[in-house]
Image (cartoon, rainbow, N blue to C red):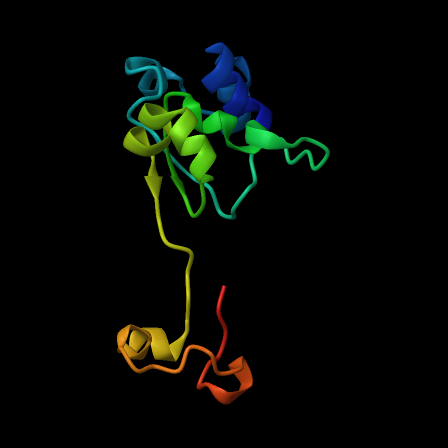
Amino acid sequence: MESALLDAMEKADMTAWQRVFNTTDKYWRRYNGSDHIFVMPAPVTNFRHQSNMRGFFHYMPQLYNPLFISVELSRRFLLEYPVCGSQKNIVVPYPTVDPDFYAGLLFEKDFPLHLPLKERSKLIFY
């Protein structure tokens, strides 16, 4: 599946798209993928998942036509590619189930942020 998406984005080759997804490429070709949305499930991952690569490599597919919804982009990447990195795509906050956050306690002026986590009413925090 990853290779079909990469071929469509980077090479405009829809052969694998039609085979893998068993559907026409009509809607992708209409706007060259600009009206499609990809959701990236985890930070610093891409379709290749190569751990030996460093730098912006993991973010590069997000420069192509589909919109990307991601939980993380590096600040340096956004400064280097301001239009594609920050205006085209959507960066969402990383999920949290911190009860202090939802109760608004973290925003109170006198909230003891210095307390160890075990002394707070914290369940889990990503």
